[in-house]
Length: 496
Image (cartoon, rainbow, N blue to C red; front, side):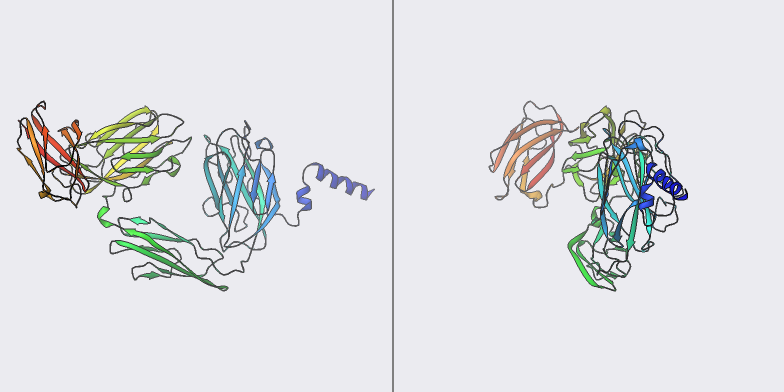
């Protein structure tokens, strides 16, 4: 009779879906929380998790929280593994994963979060197994997915429509010599300061950095300030009890302190990225920069993306925004270089409820000349009141650099001011452009009025003297751009 009751007890456990616990040699300790699914809908949740030897297919969020912690895999400390998460949802989701490295039953959302992905259907990415975790013991790994427009998942918060699943991870000692890997941010710097991050595999315990300028460091993640402009090769030597390895990245760091802009008084954040909002491409004169959208948040491109413009001349500014919805887009240039964007006279674009806005921007007179100035572009959901310092709801802010030059400046250093004579000036019905250099070939002439509008644009046959007819041109001041094989020259002329 006793044996029959015992058999019924085992069958009851199997029937209730607890067979993994019975089959499990050792389960992780219980978690302090188990996030529920509050309102399952529409295929949200998780249908497959793949991590090392784990490949587990389940129902979606209809099952709610699922404890599969007896589905386990063994990994090496100091190694990197791919985590893949799949869903059948027809809408994007936000994803996160945690591993309870210290085995206290509590997921620390800062030190134990190992994976994050936003606004994706299926997703995958790398999970780094650090040194210092509890070894040879089943640890709990939690994977969560939640509807894009709901709050991003945290370890213990109940999910609106998505789902959390738990798995087991056993971390063992790594017997291999270190493999040196590293990154730097930024790799092109105008301040001279670069911070390096060790990404080496197999648990190094010693580091030696050579920054390429005669300086070095024994820290695992040092920051270094370069004193001189130039291009530098960086090497990292790592050691552990199993060996020594070295790796170098040639011409990795570029230092250009002449391109540094004044720091802005603010850096607007993206509060809750969603749905493709943000900036995908910026085109302005020689700047043509493609980037991720608002998922990146605020991004400062001012050191790597700079252009020179001439006061009084018109330039096209085009912004490519998210394809899913129109956006409100604004741009500013800090013409007085005080680090503050003035909405009165430094707001150069204000286009609302539009996909991919563009306009012709006339560079005003009176700006600080020959100095990198910060240009800020913000694009966000329609209807948000936006200044240059306001955080974005779903979109983002990007910064660039603009150098304003005088109309009489030489466009390229290969051209000399003595290459051309322009006469008469003042002019009435015509002007002559005399080319004094045999090696300079004139290809075209562009005449702008004082507000930057093109009055005349012609391709010309290269010869010593070119006659430009101005008989029908109204009186006033103009800018003449001479385009050549060596660059361009812009001259101010007076028609009276």
